[in-house]
Length: 112
Image (cartoon, rainbow, N blue to C red; front, side, top):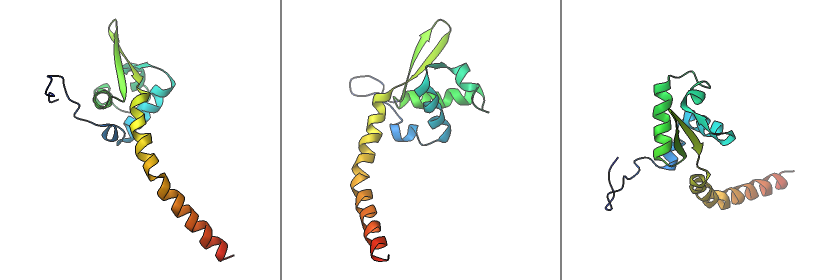
């Protein structure tokens, strides 16, 4: 992880990279229901704890999840605010879908 001008670590992964892999999207779906430890998350996959840990590192770096140390365990939680970036990006394309669906509707009405 590189450092910003203020000396704080900069993220090397963004939200889009974070959701790019199906396993990470599945982890996010699990965390949408409840906060979980890495052991609990690993139970849902046919992957090693080490592999899940790497995915969680990317999700944390992308600020899609937060982690909190409780005793000897690390508990992960979904950071819903980071998902707003995705919502904004998808919203930009809504107008194109509306136009295309409008065209499709007009074409199908003409052919009836």
